[in-house]
Amino acid sequence: MKKIIIGIITFTIFIMVMFYYNSNEKLSVNKKKLDKKDIKEFVQNKPYTLLYFWVSWCGYSQDGLVNDYYTNYGLLNNDTVQTMLIVLSDTVSVNTLMYNNNIKLPYKYLKGDSYPPVIGNLKDGYNRDEFIYDVFNYKYDDGFFFPTVLLVDNNMNGLTWSTKTYQLIDYIRAIEKKKVSIK
Image (tube, rainbow, N blue to C red; front, side, top):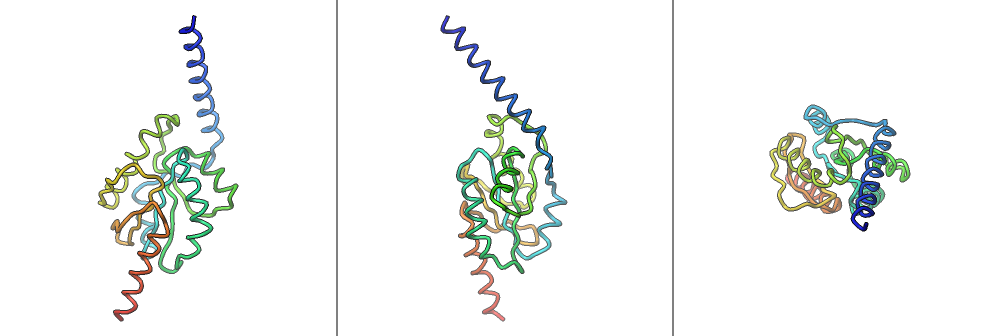
């Protein structure tokens, strides 16, 4: 009897997750899938670009985006640096988070294919690593950290990465100071 009850509960949870997943995907109206052409056009606009890789299931990603937006992105020199949010997971969460927190960053979805949240967790790091290597020839192999913030130049070179945006802002400032002092 216990096995039957456990089976029914497991099946019910599975159906609820699939229903939630399918209903949220139908609500999403903002599907901007990223490709190499998109990123190349965007990156070439300014000398440096911060690419912020975000996943909905990571509390650090959610808190980090909100805190970075209000604390660190205001420190950027908008003449030389731009930022793009790259979403690796579901569309509804990022739409809601950005709307609720009045965040206005350009963003794209890395993968257009849909997947349930449980499967997504397994694919997100792989999709990020594959994209970074494929587009920027930059090997990111230091673990499964989210958020991941990648600094690239306008020649499509990956320069460095961090989980903290302010570290990359300091890096950019050091580069800019070198250029100013050399002149």
